[in-house]
Image (tube, rainbow over the protein chains, first blue to last red):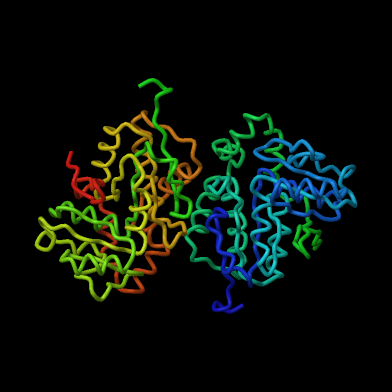
Length: 243
Length: 243
């Protein structure tokens, strides 16, 4: 591909920084690795028919009443009327195979809905990173790496996953970036990648999960390429886009 | 000071992420090193009586009509009714000594006004970093390092200056941080500090300034400790707080 036709990578660190009008022709990759997007990748790997991202608690309650399997949490705590919460270990094949799951979390499902104006919306995590990069290449569009952050704030873990994605895309020579956020993500990833678990130790969300006894899934969420399936948005539902 | 009494460092990467209600008891350090806060430090060093941060273009016009010296730019271009623009080289002793200057820029003066609810507001840059750290220590409050960014987006140059400030504060052992933005700023600073000019080469604002022929001041803006004066907000005007 000639230099002039390179696709552009941008990174957004928080929903408060998201500019929906700038991504109507782009692929948006939603990243919330602790734990929403890791869980969605796990659910699709385990045969879930689809995931409906649900923003508000009351909306989640309605889905439950209509008979959907409901996964829902706020600040790490399972909503009392939900079937289960936000750990990827909940989304077992026994529970999810063939089912459409309504899913509502503090940050991740909110930004999936924010990105709905994009040309394509996919769910990214370390669990599906290689397949994701292959899929993005096939899409051949500009890419926005959209980090969920935490309650509108920047977070480290999503940023380093965005940096890992950006590094792989740049290695193909078919992408370029002039975005300071992407450059920062790349540099932070370059510091983190040789000891990912050690680096994540200092992240605020790591501490939050540990304080609530929810940190058992962190090693799992930092595992690379456990699935080749990419959850992508179709008609408001995240479904499998197998390569 | 006992461990429990350590003051907290937080970093905000963009005005879109700013939470004014969280800093009413804090020192807010405003950072927009290319070029607003470097220029303000230069003006105060050169004897300016005060700097009035002005948000809107029309407000800037009113200050000019009322007889103030006016420094004003948008996107690097001098407003046609202003006396001069945003380069620190404009703020010479001959021009500014004893004068109160109305000052309006694309990002920097906007966030100075956003921070007005803070207990103390100071202007930071590499030009005054050592004096700034000493002053913050004397203030003995929690600190928010508030990066101007660029039109609500994250930028590299302000982030690494925030990282430099955070590093110095942490070295005193009187501060701590659990803020992912501060941890990221520290890591980016650790990568940048051995070749600051080289690192800044990749920043988007570096390219913007070069494209407009405004990059002559970059070496100056990356110079450390050219002044011991800290511009601090008093009654809506930035004035000298000499140590």
